[in-house]
Image (tube, rainbow, N blue to C red; front, side):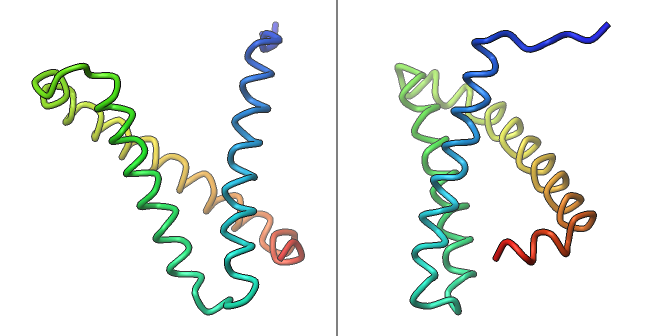
Length: 104
């Protein structure tokens, strides 16, 4: 028996992919005039993700003490998630290399 995602989960998944597509579109637009800056765009996206997730942790903590107490657990979680996402995407590009190259 397979569990179908709820309508709410499907909506959240669609929103998740829309957010991803919007960030990638912006990075691609920034590279149109200067493709040599791809490394800067990648580093900027990575930094923005780190900065925004740090903000979310701080905003949700209420106090500096709570933030400090949650910081290491959050950092571990975020590193773990990034490693999984990176591995999944590298595998996808390895498997579908030609298709991804056509999408440039």
